[in-house]
Image 1 (spheres, helix red, strand yellow):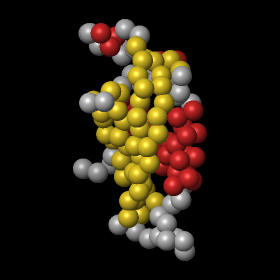
Image 2 (cartoon, one colour):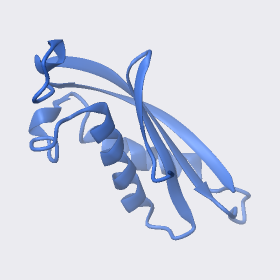
Image 3 (spheres, helix red, strand yellow):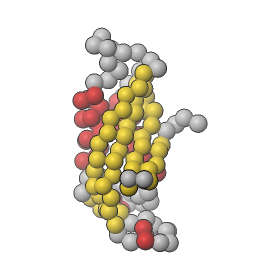
Length: 124
């Protein structure tokens, strides 16, 4: 099994719903996102997927979130914009964009601060 990982960043604001504490107030983060893709075979160039292709996919997704108030961006207008939910959202958007039976998203890791992150994967 091969695996590659890319990293990108975006900035946004949010308010956590049904939360008692500072994070119920409007605040922002400079998020760091790592996306890992895995598969069993390489293409004729010896790549699982070209890094620039995966970066383009992630960049398009992050453009939807960058410099936005997440509580107003679907699905976070209804879904609490926690790091866990954002990781899940990015995971499935990348998976949908890959549209390849040979490739799967292994995990999305998202930092809201330098020492706090959430991970979403389908692995148990």
